Image (cartoon, rainbow, N blue to C red):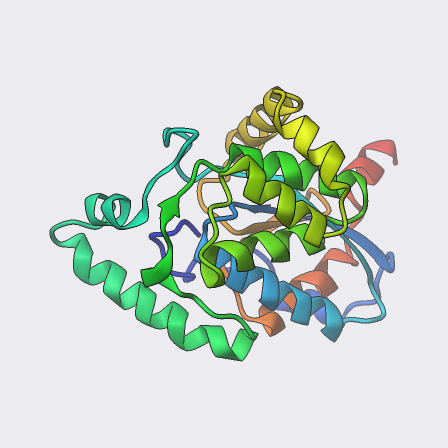
Amino acid sequence: MGDDDPATDPLAFDPEWAYLKPMSDKISVDIVADLVCPWCWLGKRNWDQAVAQVPEVKVETVWRPYQLDPTIARTGQPYSDYMKAKFSGEATERWKQMRAYLEEAAPGAGIQFNFDAIPVRPNTLNAHRVMKWAGGQGQADAAAEALFKAFFQDSRDIGDPAVLTEIAGEAGLDTAIVGDLLASDRDEKAVWEEEVFFRKLGVSGVPTYIFNGRFAVSGAQEPAVLADAIRQAVQEPAEADDKDA
């Protein structure tokens, strides 16, 4: 979901698949997300629990970029000003309700949202570049967790290249290399093109989980719901395998 939408999207799969004999014990899941989306951090923790509930399935998780607001300046914008403008008038009550839900759900997921302490609403293009490089090193999950925690719990500006370099190091990446890459425009075009690809597929809110390129589940669904989606996915061949058949 976006940072302004509750996790209430209808499910896009049939739970009855969970009782059929699997065609494969391996699946690939794309998680389309933004690093400033609170539903995405909750969704990540739910996803981790879902994968743990289905240990017999080998799950490859691939993080994909999505910018909820790519129009924000690269230097960011004061968070309180941004949220007041976004949730003004009638939308104010809506945000209060969503915030209350997120803050209530957070402890159960082992996370903490410190919304009042967030200083900056950043542009997340650089954060997605870091995610891309982390993925190349097999550290995407660690980087995603570090970025979510830095923004929502530790009140760090994840649009600041210096801060991103520190977080990358915490996730196991080489800070010297990441610092040099962030000082360039390396992979900016690649990140944009990847985001556009998923938008053209119909992704309009995050998190969105795409299973084997065949079906999607939207929103920060409960672990049991996501686990059932994993069970369905093992019944279906991946899109590429289907084309090769």
